Image (cartoon, rainbow, N blue to C red):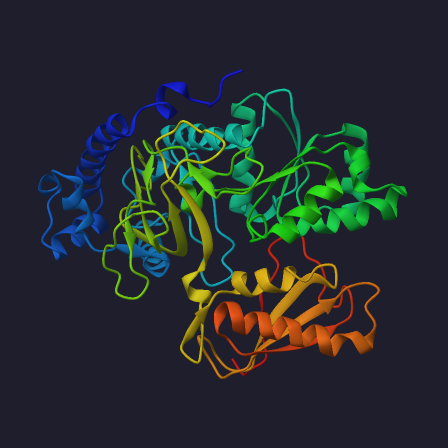
Length: 455
């Protein structure tokens, strides 16, 4: 059995892949400059010509060119001027777009980054197949696919690489009543679950209610759960894997690019880059505050700029994602032979809070809370009584306490959690406990904040 999906590309040396990347980068920049009014204006504004890029160092000097808000403005302009929503950064005739999925639009107008020509759709399936293969997904598997499918949401396109790989996809969608999903799973007997961690947690609770058996009885041995933090938190990962009797892997294809996924190593070691020939992300790292390039070395933390390679329709160039990542350059114990680095996703830059000068991300708070499982369930909310990011201490955290914990035990438990927050992140906090399941359960992304201030 082959170790990687695409031996021709994934087994190249770093020197070989860098030659391909630089050649494709220069071609992509020239293509965008000649095909897009948006990119031509951007390049001209900074005094840039594609021919100026002769080395990797030349490229890194270029500042960020776009973020999500600019993408939305680009879409609004193309809608007004050309009657299509794909944006002024579209580099091909709109009729060449054969498939489109949008982001959720929870923070504004949905973006159409997941819009592909036939060439780009093939490219998407190829890059994502490498991620799924690394996670141990194989053609003999049966995948229960429970990401939301309605409303044109981008999660639906994640299933197409499974068909590309020749894998059976049992797609119901997370919006299907969980009782129906349990019934269908009992008939089809999947061995892989693809969903958000929130859905998987809800499925663990719903399955015994419907069948009288633990969820492990269904025979799911591979968990491909993504879209939320969790896999990097040992206590959450342990609970999930013990419940199903399988291994949890994560993946990240951010804005339809940056193909990366976790491996079969015993311990979670971050996400491997598997498609250096298709996009640039990790190695174009900028400082979180100054937005200046920083050295990409082991342990470096910054925001990655996303650049497409060999993309026809909606290529992204120097795109600010707002995702904070940590880079690891040393080899992984799994022995993955590819030349890419590994990353850990630390959170969204927009979610960063400042408490008395100390910065903290919601995932870091959740990491502390879940370390106290089973005395807590792991469900939590950061309660905001004033607009972020600057928070007047203490940081208020609402936490579900675990089954069997008595009210007289809560003050001591709160003290321990607050001390751990102060020790690890230098943040003063105040814990408020609520009953088991009082914070509810969701099948999409679990909210991290509870806003209690006038909008």
